Image (tube, rainbow, N blue to C red; front, top):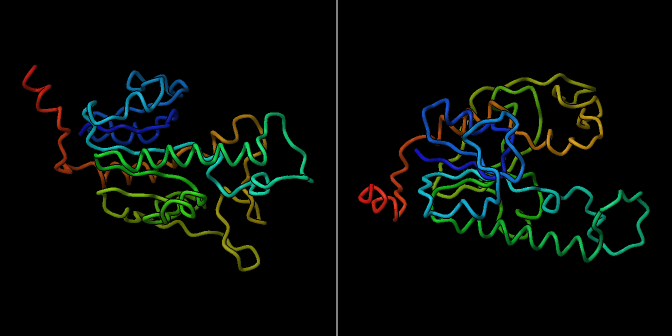
Length: 228
C-alpha cells in the first residue's frame, strides 16, 4: 500500500508502515530525524494530492493555533501573561487559527482514506467532533495524552494493550506526568516537537489495523500503470 504520513519528521509512523512492507513516505518542511531516504522535505500540499497515487494518508497538522492551550491569547488584551517574542495574540492569532482550520478542511476533503490526528481543540469545536479519542496507555505506552482522530473510510482504532497508572492520592498518573498531572518535559525550543511525536505503540496500531487493502485505487494510478 502507498501511504503518506503528512506533517511528520520523526519517522515513527513511516517506520511502522515500512516495517510491514508498505510503500510509506513522510513529508514535512523539516528534514527527517532519522535521515531516511523515504522522507519528502517540502510542502505537504505539493505532495498530498490523489495524482500521487496515495491509498492511505495519516496527517498530523501543527496544533499551535488549533489547540485550546493558551486560549487567553485568542482574546483581545490586556494580557497578564508574559508574552514570548513572536507570540501572536488577539485578531492575529484568531486569523492564524482560521487559516489552520481551513487547512484541516482541505485535508478532510482528500478523496482517499485518511486519518487526521490532533489534541483536543478547535477542530472538534468549530469543524467536527472527532471520530474517537485515544490514549497512549491503551496501546502499550506508559503515558497519558488525549489524542483525537478524525477518520475517513477507516475503522476505529482498537486498543492493543493497557498500561496501568500509578496512583497519587487516588488519581491516576503515568510516567510522562508529574504527581500533579503536568507533563514532565521541561520548557525548551524543542518541547513542541517532542510532545507532538507519535508514540510507537500508537504508530504500530495504525500500521497493523489500517495497513490493509482498502480497495481504493487513485483514478490516475491505472493510467500510470498502462504508461509504464
